[in-house]
Amino acid sequence: MERLVYIKTFGCQMNEHDSERMLALLAGCGYRETLSWEKAQLILVNTCTVREKPEQKAYSILGRFQSLKKRRPEVILGVAGCVAQQEGERMLAKFPFLDFVLGPGKIHLLPEILKEVERGRKGVCEVGFEDTRCMDLPLPPTPPLRAYVTIMEGCDNFCSYCIVPYVRGRERSRPSDEIISEIEALVQRGAKEVILLGQNVNSYARNNPDELTFPQLLAKINEIQGLKRIRFTTSHPKDFTEELMDAFGRLQRLCEHIHLPFQAGSNAVLERMGRGYTREQYLAKIKKLKGLIPNISITADVMVGFPGEKEEDFIQTLELMQEVEFDALFSFKYSPRKGTKAAHWEDDVPPEVKQRRLETLQELQREITLRKNKELEGEIKEVLVEGRSKNSPQEVMGRTRCNRIVNFPGGYELVGRLVKVRIKEGLPNSLRGELFDKEETGDV
Ligand code: SAH
Ligand code: SF4
Ligand code: F3S
Image (cartoon, rainbow, N blue to C red; front, side):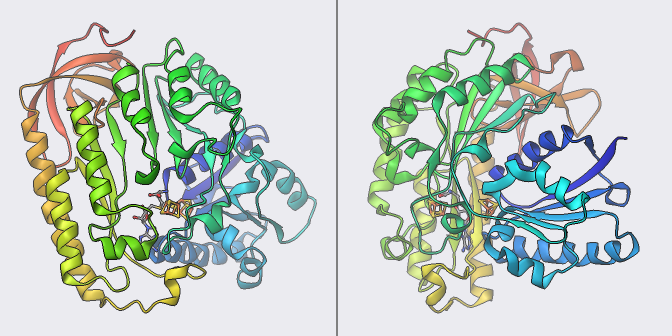
């Protein structure tokens, strides 16, 4: 009998991808996804603990499922993700109605855990990290057009504010032949674009001289026939090498877009964050990159309100943004995370100051993004068409190589194709265009 699973995901692209992979594993156990939790026989909450907000959301949804468990005790309820890893057995003590707790390093064990729960075992807890097995999981039967591919897990950087190294473990890189065969299989099943995932992709296989370097891995993926585009995320500025910058110019499938979080514009703050680069070093890399690849799109993460952040530090963040002119920016208010170095320091920037700095920064970024989107008006861009537009059934949506969303009038037959679109209007968060040439000229 077919059973239904409801999965709620918080957090980053790695967590979203983990959810996709868990669904693929569950498909092998006879489960199909439902978007309605009332109908599900299995409920999975895939949690994130990088900031206070997503963690709180995960806890509040668990509260909601507690009453469901009372009404329907036969529903299996599990918590996965980074809160599960962080809390482990403590999670079971806090929420005794949970059937299992599963850390991200153990997701390959999900089918066995379910069997045990079905046999009547209560409170199964599997957390911790081993090798790269959690990255080698079955593919979904119909992968999305833009498919995530994990190339490494974990992080060794221990930025002073960040919980990720504790909840994702030490850096482990997946063997390159496994990555290549996964991408080949995805392309055979219809994927057109791959997004290589890792907390710090540019230190791929850093400690393994027998493995390809990250730029070499990109070059190999670039040869896969039928694959149209390659992207990767996230890169760390300190490991962003010239060899990698050159790859953008050399590899025709590699999209001209880099996500390069800078976190703060002041050297004093960067130093306390333990980021391993200065403002000047970051800016020098950006300058070199723009010199080599003038149309590169640069996005980043930034934080406000880190302990000890003064107004002049914050102004330096704004100045850095003005100098770089990011295409998009993901901005966050600092929140202390238990177990990290910075959690021992006083969280001394008042909440209202954090809020004001965040709003100031977001307002500046809105102006920059809109200006850059308007600059594209009149240009002809290669777009990979992904599906129907949310705006209108007569329109389709896709992305440019620089990762901007474009909506334009067109039919469903364009989905999956690389077409040329003339940009007519730059909007705050997207572009509007018209089809210029539907022949696939971009594929090589
Ligand atoms: N591996 C990536 C992303 C890590 S988490 C990197 O190294 O950049 C995603 C983003 O969350 C970070 O870039 C940072 O901006 C933000 N973040 C991490 N810890 C945080 C904290 N304690 N408070 C607020 N934002 C945080
Ligand atoms: Fe966290 Fe820093 Fe690692 Fe990114 S590089 S995951 S911010 S510790
Ligand atoms: Fe969150 Fe874990 Fe990702 S803490 S940001 S889900 S690695």
